Amino acid sequence: MAIQAGRNRSVTRSVPNPAYFVEYMSMKAKAMQNKLRKKSKSNLDNRASSRINIFISYAHEDRELVASIDSLLRETFEFAPLSIYRDIEIKEGQNWAKQIDTALQETDILLVIFTERMKMSHSYTGYEIGYFNRSIQQRRKGSAGFDRIYIPFCIGADVPDTMHDIQGISIGADEVYKVLKTKIESGTEPVVDEDHPVFKLLARISDLVTQTLGTGSGHAQKSARIAKQAAALYRIIHEYLQGRVSSETYPERKLIIKTLRRPNFERDGIDLSKASVELIGDFADIFGITTTQTIGREFTWLELCDKIPAELRANCVAGIQQLATTVLKGAGDNYHVVTTVPRDKSFRMFVSKVVTYVSQKTEIHIYVVQMRTKDYGDPQSTRLLKAISVGLRFRSLVLEDQSQFRPEKLGHPVVTAGDLKAKVSEMLSQMDLILREAVEADLSDPAFLIMIWGKKQEKKVQDMIDVWECTRKQLYAAADDVLSASDDENFRRKKENFVKALQAFAGDIETMNREFTSRILTLLRDYVEQKISLSSHEEKPVATG
Image (cartoon, rainbow, N blue to C red; front, side, top):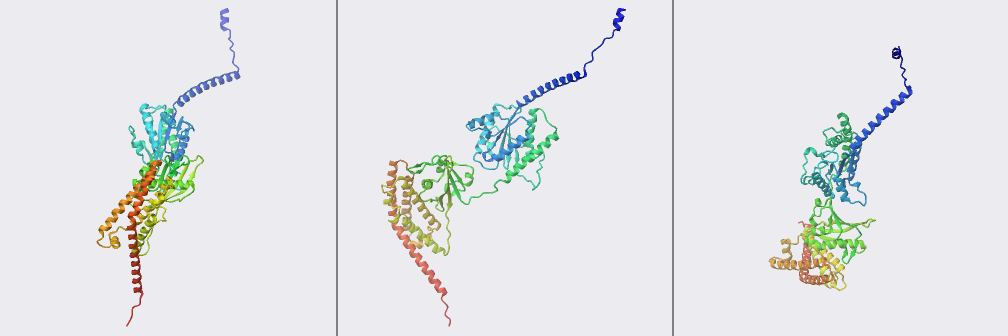
């Protein structure tokens, strides 16, 4: 009975309070959420350690375009652990080259921006490509887990030799993204399809991001997002290409001398040994340097001096230095003439502007303008007038007592090295200008020489030509020695040689100059009288019977 009673005894279980049950289940849910958060954070931390490093290599001239591309990439991939590096990241005082090298060592994607413009800084883009290439050979995969790659992005241009010339780089046509031209109708938004290079560029980077994160949205969603950003990038490129210079011509020439500090004045003028020179325009006739060779580069002063033809170098270099010295001192003539080696063209040089920055960096702007003359009236009388001008100007330059270029004046002991060099440079410039006028008038025409000296005078003419060429070359050689003289002892000796050469030159040409000028004056007088006589006969009325 006891057992039965025990089996039939009812067992009473306590039922939990409903409020307590809700609190219990809430705590359990929170614990599960915290666990999931920790797991999710762990996954994010792992992804963050797989950061994608993009290095944008570009020329400084394209900095504004690249800044817009940088901004768009950050916006497009804001959800991803993306790090975009360009040289603006370098802080003042840091080792610039070391910072660049360090960034390239960590780079996963080298995005190289090429445009059609010729650039002074283009060579450093080539350095970055070469350094990254060597880095890839040492470490193929990057921290993001994929093979490190180049992405050439060409805007209005093809891949230049800078990329092709680096040993070990092999880039297929499908790996180069080119946008050579753009077109957007007024008032419309651009539509960029999946086959367009801009879309393909963003899609390529997007694929690498997705690969690194291990996640991705659906194809349709991804395509819509990329298409929107590609349209924005296309507009950036369109605005850049529309802002390009379509054509550029240089009617005249200019050279800009640049110094980091205001130039020091020395015995012979300002010191330009550490200066750089930018040439604008075509200097082929003067220095043998064409427009295409001057665009986007600067020459050191010594490089420029070496490029000037030997026949012009001493006078041209001294003339430029004298111009700059004159203007910076605020005294003297802002004028120098350079004549080409064939003596068929002359150019006037003058300083148009001097810019001094707060840092004392200085720019001296020198225009180089071709001197041109235009003839009017009767060709024969014009030619005779030019011949008279040549004869009289030579006479006034070196033969007359009043000339400042007489040997006794230039050779005087009180004439300093700087003064003599300025005078010699000016004398040579004026002499070359006279010779250019002789070439322009074609005074060596055989028919014209026969008219001056008469028939069967070939030997006399040849003897005068030989004397002229010999004594002129000796004078020019002595003048070049003076202009290139450095130390005092060397200068005194060269000064004496120059004075002797100038005396010999004046003595050798005095007789032929006098005879030449007088013969031309006689010919012009006779020609003018003949023209007047003919004119009067034409105007005389015809008698009628």
